[in-house]
Image (cartoon, helix red, strand yellow):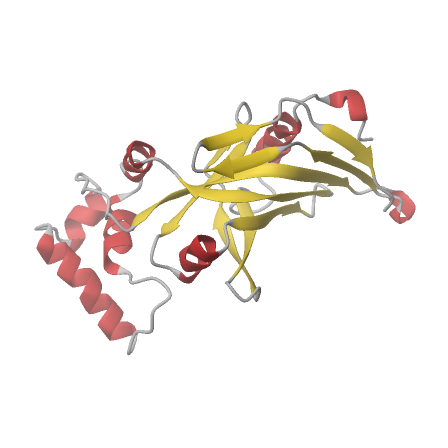
Length: 219
């Protein structure tokens, strides 16, 4: 059962549930979360991304993408967003609402360096979300990047080399203002706890409240 007193910082519970999902090995990519954005006209859009970091102290989660993609254009137009984790076999769901800001370049560089060489080349080769004539054209774009960095398919397999991060690729921090935990219970009397704090993002920086208010919600 979810208890109001179980944590003063709900992101610690988020991290704990994610760790459990990873350790249970019940599904591939347990760090998958849905990110929902909206364009300047308010039309919603959702897609799956990988949560690569939970910063429990400051209160944000991190994902990576192409800064020229549709999601990035929508984030620029409207940085308010929501995210969803769902682990059906564990009976867990976590809903997040907040505001998205780009991650620092040094953080992006550090993470990009941990990716496989093939994934690094793919980040350079893909003009994400834009049309491509056919698969052959996409493969040719990939080959052009191999040639640009003097790489071969064999070197990708060996993964012995790294290349720099494209300037149009990096991370986003979803700063959390609200988070709701859903725990599956019998007779559909599920447990729901909703946490909220103050969050202000302006040209002066980011201000967050230290205290979270918590409410139990009916299923």
